[in-house]
Length: 451
Image (cartoon, rainbow, N blue to C red; front, side, top):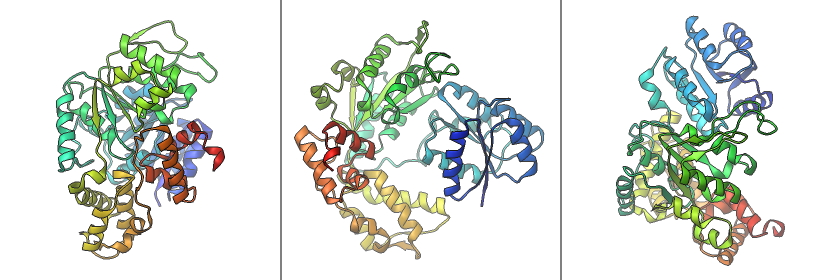
């Protein structure tokens, strides 16, 4: 069992993280200061350290320097907010294994932890810093994603190559799980801004009252809880690309502020009288029908035209028939590496099941199913027995998002919930949307109380 040390002065956050990692099978300890962390490192065998950058007595960089001066090469991952990304880069030059931005994405953190625990310790790695920052690296992404060979895939990535060198704002439209963030990152990697930051924000995960602060930052004392200055994502992305995922979830008030920032190329942190000039390229994504949202009065038409200088439409996996087995084997290779298994591929019946299934959850669903099948498989090949999810899952008989009109959406949502016995996760999968979007739809159409 690997031993993890969390160095974090936010006790509540530390407890949540500790409980989650314990469930994942780690032995976890925590410290709320650098001094306490040093004592624990000296007395216990620690396999990996997760350290906040800002701590009461010193910061994570001081801890890293102390470790290296004492010859301790335990891998350390820095946890930081947008405002401290440059400091995180400095930490990596001093030998930090990686960094994750707060609020931490659990899947991303777990992946980075697994990589850190497998990687031999290093004292310094300036050249590697850019490679390990999956949000800012211009490196080739071949090992992380497969573009595919279908006509639909070739057309999509031809458009990506055409638009990437320009400064046009790009709107990526497609169902959940189709790889929208990868396309956004690829646009950045092929652009003239590739050596500058790529900052991704999930607009659906930001509480309405905090959205403006996430985008534009705030000054100390601007509101209750603003204990320090905060640099927003626009300043953190200056010179590079900002990716706004699920932009349709932004409140109307934040849409107004966003439009002003894009038009004037200036932002004003909350509580500040000072305007900051910013130079960012916007790439946005949605699985919503924004034109329908405009008709309902939920999305500003002027903002829509500002973010939609060029549209990319993500094909669904069911429309990329030639790519299905390519992706299945690609995800199998990843799962083999993660689980230290050596499966050769899929037998004939399993291959047929993969190609005949309609994949309502697209690539994300396939990756999860293949990983589970890899874990369960005992022979050289994955068989239909390990693909029980495909046999029991309900194929997508309804149209995937973006859905077209209000009444059709309502009926499709109700039918999906009926088929799944009100299992919202399964229903969202059938509809080709994420669970948060489904909850938003239930609220929008006043369906929550009827279930």
